[in-house]
Image (cartoon, rainbow, N blue to C red; front, side, top):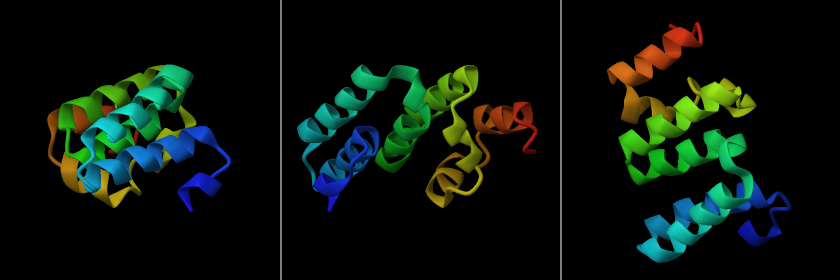
Length: 104
């Protein structure tokens, strides 16, 4: 099903999450690398999503900050993504970002 995804950035995001969950960190890093190297900060939301699923709070927050700086439209999902909310809830950096986005 992943290979049928026509948008590379979405396919690489999903691959990075699934490879990591299956224990193939090298393949996960390769998919994330393709995503970042091809699209840069334009896909900050997708990068933050990957890091969230990986449980990497610092990298997820850094990606969200980059997304905020470039006005990544994916950030509209920030409060509706339960996994991110659970991981980042109560984090002062996350709450500061939500305030700057007028979401708190």
